[in-house]
Image (cartoon, rainbow, N blue to C red; front, side, top):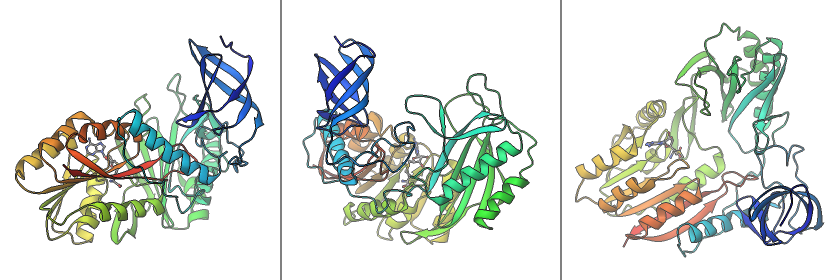
Length: 447
Ligand SMILES: C[S@@+](CC[C@H](N)C(=O)[O-])C[C@H]1O[C@@H](n2cnc3c(N)ncnc32)[C@H](O)[C@@H]1O
C-alpha cells in the first residue's frame, strides 16, 4: 500500500478531468500537471483506501506535447489547469473529455467532432470576478490557490487582457490607500469582498462587492480608472451581507459613469447591465451562436423557445416573422436588458419571459400543443435535469440545439433525451483555453 509523503515512480495513463490517472501498487493515483504517457517522480500527498493523490516532483520522461507555461503563477493558482500542454493537446484533451463523459455517464456512443479552437488562447476573457483578501493596507486580489481558500495575489493574469490587470492594480492601490478592510471568511468581518468587472468593446463596468453599507469615498478609484479607461467605464457597488459562496448580493447601486455596455454583436444591437450573464470569450461566443443558427432546423417551426436566454442576443438573431419566438430567463436584470434589446432591434415576434424554465416551459408547450416546436437550451452547469427533459419529451418538441458548459450534466441529460431523440451533432468548442472547462453544442432531432 502507498504511504503518504513517500515518493513513487508514476506513469500517467489517461486523463480524469484535468488530472492524469495511473495505477501504482494496486492504487489509483491522481496527479495534476502531467500529460498522458509521461513518467515522473511523484510525492504521495494523500491516500484513502485504494485511491491516492500526488504532486509531480520531477518529470523523468517528458511528452513532446509539454510546453513551458507562460504564466509564473501556473501550478499554484487554481485558474488554469492545462497551461503545461501545447494548445493542440489541450484541444485533444477537451474532445476526449466530452467523448468520455458521453460514453461513461450517458452510455452514449455518438460521434464527437474535434474541439473547435478559440481565436485567442490568452487574453480572451471579457470578465473577471476575483475575491479580495488579506488585511488593511496589504490587500490581495487574485484567484484561489488550487484546492484552497488562499488567494494568490495577481499582478498579471494571462487569461484576462491588459484591461483586467489594470483594473486589479487600480483597485488594489485604492483599497490599500483608503485603508479598506478585506472580508474575512472566518469571522465575516471586513468591508470589501470581491471585484467583478466586464470589458466589452472598450467599455468597462466594474462592481465592487461590499459586506454592508459603508461610507466610502470612491473618488480616488474613479480617478485611477479614468487614467486607464477615460470616460468609457461605469462603477457600481453591490452589497452582499450573506455569508455564503455566492458572490453578488441582491442590491447593486450605480456610483459613477456608464450604466450599461452598448454594442453590436452577431448582428444584434445590445445593452448589457453589469451583472447580466454574457459569454466570457467574444470570438467563441459568436462562433457558437452561428453554429446554433445553422443547426436549428426551422423549416417547419411554428414556435421557437430559447431557454436560459440571458440578455437574448441569440433569441433576437433566431427570431423570424415565420414563427413565434419566446425567450425564458430567470435573472430580472437580464430580462430588462433583453426587453431593451428586443426594442432596439425591432423584433416584434419575440416575447421575453421572466421566470424559471422548469415552470415556464411546460406552460408554453401546453399553450402551443399540436404546434411544431423548436428549442434552444443553454443551461448553467447543473444542466436541464429530469423534469425539464420530461417536459421536452412529453411536449414532442421537434428539434433541439443544446449548448452546454458541463459535459457531465450534458451526458446525463442526453441519456434521458436519447430515448426519444436522435443525437445528430456533437461539437466541443474551446470557450475557456488553458482551463479544463469546455463548451459543447449538440443537435437533437425527434425520432
Ligand atoms: C449559460 S447562461 C446562457 C445565457 C445565454 N444563452 C447567452 O448565450 O448569453 C445561462 C442563463 O440561464 C439563466 N438561468 C439559470 N437558471 C435558470 C432557470 N431555472 N430558468 C431560467 N433561466 C435560468 C442564467 O441567469 C443565465 O442567464
